[in-house]
Image 1: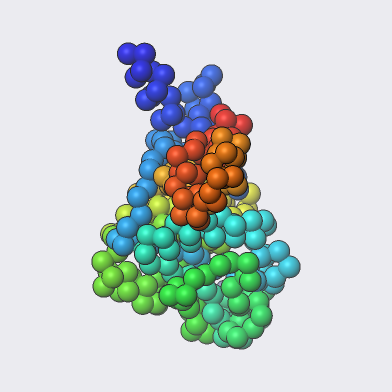
Image 2: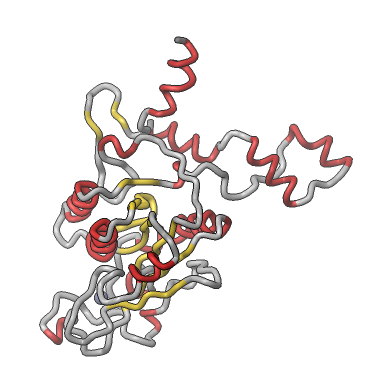
Length: 279
Ligand SMILES: [Zn+2]
């Protein structure tokens, strides 16, 4: 009994669960989670999984033509996901808005948005800090001047490519939560993919206050699950060698692989801290 309560049950509690009231708190643009789907999971990534990075382009980041607030903050998190998927030899996709200069979504054509992500422009490039590995499949969307396409699946080869590669589960992050991420996630669900929203790697526009919250709720209602880096079992990088190993280090320097092996055996301090602070 003691073991059960002290060792097994507690770690399963959602770190954002408010213990004094039986409710889940929710703050927009945070990594808070809703309902049961925030129970901790351990995702083991395989070749049946794919990472879909949505529209992390200059124009959607601060300083761009249609900046998503804090849009650039998803980049280091996505780089960590990229490492996880690359290590598992899982497929990585990066979608991009790739508009002709007279695209229907632009204000001059009667659309809601300023011109953005025009083909070949600087603004349409992926953010330079995003570390897309070689072998990333680029999916260009909304290339037809007369059609808007928020979803990475809309008018593209994405679904076909995923299916021919045997992918059954997709993990989606990027920009913006309430537009292209939402529509990509909803389409992935419609097409039968198990779909994970990478909650710590998305940011939204919130044209109307509450849009992001509604978007996340809609994705969950349609069967998407939420995940954050905490839900992946392995530490991403070997932390610098610490005191307990000092003697050993003096005798024989560790190789990179050995250092990583040791790192895996250590508690995951970085994530633990985050969970504690918010718990
Ligand atoms: Zn667009």
